[in-house]
Length: 243
Image 1 (tube, rainbow, N blue to C red):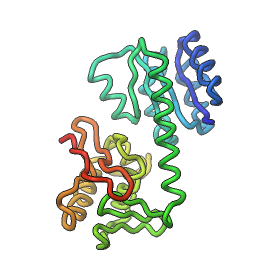
Image 2: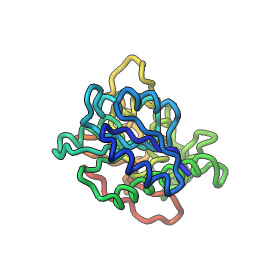
Image 3: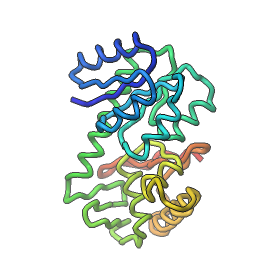
């Protein structure tokens, strides 16, 4: 099934999650502190469950440390309930934020949902119609790195296509500007994540010049951006962006 890394300083909770996930056929790696978690993240897990309130290196620091090296979903598990804490976790690269105390069936359902999304994204990237993904009038060829709207080619720069591909392969997932910058330009690149805003503005303008009625890239205020459309032919209108 999947390789899942659980990072939490509560031994009883870690044991519970390990038992439940292994009973579903997953391989489970466990770490009781942030430093050990960073080391185990090098084993390329398919999903990470990460506590925030740990002594020493907390979950925010762990996420900040590993996010540029791992692309798998990171699910924060925390008793920190404020909106500010949730936004911070998502902005640092988390894909979900689950409050303690939590419902075990809900947590397991969210794990399954994130793993299914990753499987769909991989399937889209590796095959299907000669590596074409279609979203309404927009078509993206992952092999030739070309995109068209209503069969008219989009003139995208390398960075613009990279951003388009990243968002399109993860529909509904929110990426912060910092996440996009690190994934596209690299963790050690010189520059400012504000350039992401300009690139997305350019992508939107180029698509809108042909198809002004459909919103593909939505803005999630205070966090970042997400792909609004779902793949498939005749998929209907795009969901409204949170703007």
